[in-house]
Amino acid sequence: MLPNRPSLKKLLLCACVTSSFSAFSGEITITTKFGDVRVNDNVKRVVTLSEDALDNTIALGIKPLGAVATRGGDTVSEYLEDRAEGVSIVGTSRQNNLEAIASQRPDLILASSTLSKEQYDILSKIAPTVAPASSGIVSGSWMTISRSYAKALNKSAEMESILNQVKSRQNKLKTMVTAQLPEGKRTSTIARWMPQGPIVMSASLFANDVIAATGFDVSDAGLVKENRPHSSPLSLENLTKIDSDWLFLATLNTEGKDALEAARKSPAFSRLNVVEQDHVVTVNGQLWSSSAGPLAAQAILDNIENTLKTKMQ
Image 1 (spheres, rainbow, N blue to C red):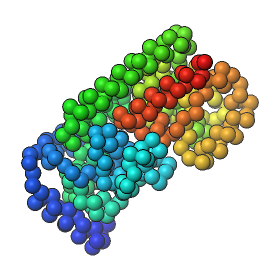
Image 2 (image 1 turned 45 degrees about the vertical axis):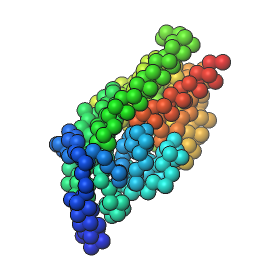
Image 3 (image 1 turned 60 degrees about the vertical axis):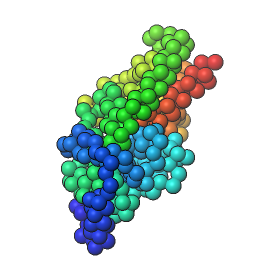
Image 4 (image 1 turned 180 degrees about the horizontal axis):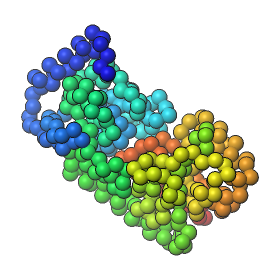
């Protein structure tokens, strides 16, 4: 609901007036989740309301005025902290701060593909709002969303170059993976350890999509329902369901890290084949289970390359 506060009403009025009298050199029409949206072809003031919107905007050489905090944190993801220095936090992955957004006087708002119609109706009164149309959690969807953000920023050609760089590096790492790991020994699972136990991330989720292109055989063990990002928490007795050749194990916060350290001491964990083979790779949960975009892809590929160098020596 739109808060009935004079300060917000005033900010919305100012934002609308600013938008109405902007000097448009031209316009781009973007097909979005909520229909076509017209955007100035030379926007200067951008607010990003999803982690992938922030990633893509920075990848294209634009530092937004505002962004949302990463899941499980109060600032942006660690892999973007240096690039996003000075960017104001205007909400979280679950809730936008409308006053903070309006106070930035944005020319363009890049929102999540999961944005609700109620929130869209409010945000679009502040500035043109692009919520990409998405087919859900399916392989390759992150690139479709990246192209949508790039078009809104009038940088489609630049985005194609950036995505080609990701693909080129994936192909290079695939050569390394297939050379170092025998066929049939490349199954991998990404799990995020929560205080309640591990949750298995969907095989179609962004990080799995990225590493699948490097030659790993990704799996969610059939535990994740269609179009869901992850499974329900597993008990220690059911840990064998994540016993693949490689286990990329993520945590989001201190509670998750503490729970993981406690689990490592249990016989159920130590008996896993992936543990005995020393193929458990601890990774950053903000990056591997919450982020998306070309910069996140490159950071994950960094992790894969380092894993191959350290674990296969």
